[in-house]
Length: 143
Image (spheres, rainbow, N blue to C red):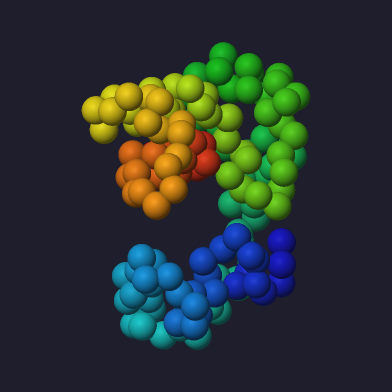
C-alpha cells in the first residue's frame, strides 16, 4: 500500500481531502460530518496503520475473508484461478460476470430486446445499453 492513501489512483479519498476534481455524484460531506467537517482529521484517520487483527482478517495471501459454509470456503481456497488477483485493480477480485446473463437481465428489466443492447447507433441515447455496459463492466455487483 502507499504511505499516502489519497494518492492511490483507484481511490476516491483524494476527493475527501480536497474538492478539486470531485465528481458531482460523489457525496463526501456525509463522511466528513463524522469528523465535524475537518478534512485534516479525516485524512489523519485514513493514514493510521490498521490494527493487526484487521490486517490478518483481510490478508490476501490467505484469500481474504470468505463468507459461506465450510464446504464453500474450502472450494474457494482450492481454486487457483480465483487466488490469482490483479492487486492494482480491486474489481478483479470478484468472479467474472456472465455477459450474456447480464444482457438478458438488463433487457428484461428495461423491457427491450437483447439486440438493442448489443448494437449501437450514432447520435442516439440508449439508456438500457448504457446500464448494461455499466453492470457488465462492474462485474454485476449490487448497485
